[in-house]
Image 1 (tube, rainbow, N blue to C red):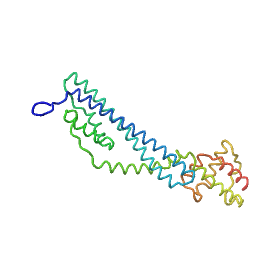
Image 2 (image 1 turned 30 degrees about the vertical axis):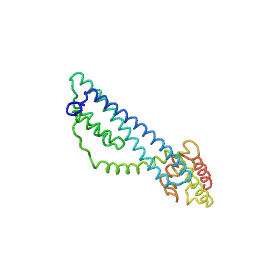
Image 3 (image 1 turned 180 degrees about the vertical axis):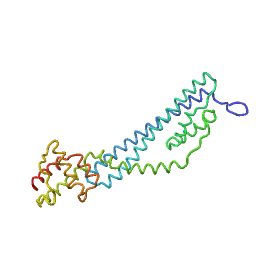
Image 4 (image 1 turned 135 degrees about the horizontal axis):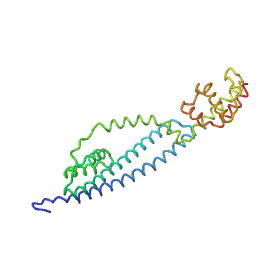
Length: 261
């Protein structure tokens, strides 16, 4: 305690070291949050797989949106760590400047990083306090916050979620929907084989079922029947099934070709 009850200001070097310690502490908090989110992601993935086995696509879509949100959150947390590292580098530079000039200097790099960090809800309070201390020390200037950013960010996330759903479903289910779709296609093939009518499904004459023949047979299947979209199958499921070249489909197609020739 100084004269008249006023606490003397801390030496610049001590301030910089304190700031660095606080930032490292927050980085450890971020690491824990990332691990927690990733553990929850694994649970969601298992739920998606279970729903896919039951052919509950609506449930999978809801869970996929949740997964998009969590991945987006992890991405933001990694970005915040990068900004924290920038601040730490700035603190090291301040110590170097302090040894030469004897005082702390303004840093645009530190200011830019802090502007991004005060927008992260998980560390917002700590970063705001640090910003005030840095402003008082003359390292950064007063920062203006964009109050509309949160709303715009939410809208952008929803758009990305819609765009990523099919990609995530195929990535996680590893063909579970394909198996369900294959069974429906086989049922349709059985029905068509009973009709034995080439007018219903023209025959791809001369196509074998190996190597290039498989690809040709699949292309023919897509051209002549697949794009008619059988009831109960979505476009994404149809495409997934064709990409996987399910052995059941190839076998059924081969039998069908023999039946209608």
